[in-house]
Image (cartoon, rainbow, N blue to C red; front, side, top):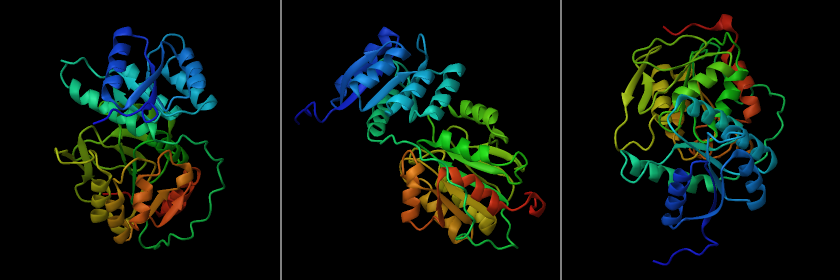
Length: 357
């Protein structure tokens, strides 16, 4: 098999202040046959300047850097020279939180730092690192469109006798910032429980919960086994667990298995909501790569639920919403700026609501 020419290789900028770790990353990239390392930077300021000069296809960036850290470097790069960025982080609590904040600032994904050749789990970490860089290099980073005035809710007929009792949301690439925007647009006394499946690297969902809790008016938490759903509370699926319902108003968690394409799975969540709430549910599918959620959202729509999809222009990756739209699962397409307003209008006034029991 012929080695790809340099024109076919994905051009990568590596941003890492630790020399041993930088050499490890560069070695992995060069030995893969898919990447060309076009530059290196040891701090955030160098990363910004190198990005503007080299225009790489993708950036692999550490979160902890001297001077300005990976979060601030991401923020400046996305303002001055938008480029796909993958955060490469270790397992410390501070690194996890700053990595999640970087996702909100425009980074596309976060992965664990690959371990050495003989470390436990190192092969999986190396594979994840290379795969994520390859996938994110193909993402077109676009300028966000200005908000529009939320429209009326025409196009999603609502039966006054079947007021929604639960809101289910699914997202992947670009999701943390998008989900935060929607949750932040809901009222502090939002009358429904909210179930969220967000694809994110293992070990980072806790930091995502903490960040959402500090930046939205709702109470955000990891879902627990057999937990009773409460109005105005947001439940995120934990690592390696599918989140579904044990009847109306209670969460159950199920371990993932080797054949699962996604864990947690949006399909499983939406299917469960359809079975337990039918027409008394709102389902929303948002920015993300792949097709998770299309089948489950279709089941929810078929059961009479109200289904929304984020539009292409406001998605970081128009994968999951597109797959759901093609499947006929989406009753209405809306921009990110409009989703919260439409959800509020569909939910109805708090006085109309009946808490899940």
